[in-house]
Image (cartoon, rainbow, N blue to C red):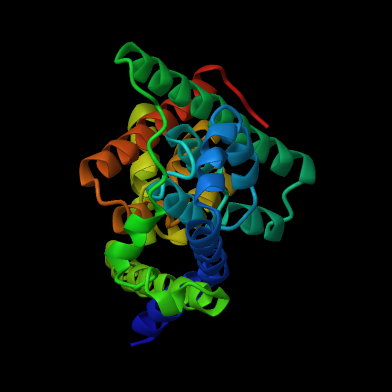
Length: 298
């Protein structure tokens, strides 16, 4: 019974943490849809080249809500794929509060955040470059049309109803979107919490102490778990000197908080969602392996 209560409390707290970010995200998106459709299209063009830079810098702030917001913006095609991946890779989640609570020197904390941000920015720019080159070879625009309205159709929030076009209508629609995603995240966080409890954090730790390559792959797989427990486990193992810096970075780079969970909820193209998850896993684990290969230490 105590385990059940702990899992439920953790799930509720984790889900509540993203509420402000979700609401603000949908508030912005609703406003863009109702008031500035032409301006919204120009946002994509203006952030076409600098999106990954801003995404990598924003992502280092210790809140998984940014990755959730990014998933919504990408589903509405307000940001590019490179920007989305940059945010996912740099997202800090629970790592920063844990490192601070363990009195890790500020210099080391800043270096870890800088590594995540730089990797996210570079890979984000590389992805956008490849996407643009591919579309250019096909003689078509690399920018997908902004499609915020598809989110409204999916959530059945009736955003286009005449009575929902004013400021209160925008707030109402944003609240509907936020509530739907909040309940979705809460349910899946509960399920994942129980799975982690059944497997046991100790067993996950043992798996991470196997061969170097296997440990990076396992760290990346754990990082894919859309739950803050993943980043906590990986960070604690590094602090206990049970895994290398590179192995920790593999897990933390892949770990995008609940970003992937929200992406699968709001983006209808499931094949694309799977490809994004694979890209995140590959770039995250390879980056971690390279850090260990070059013997990077802090």
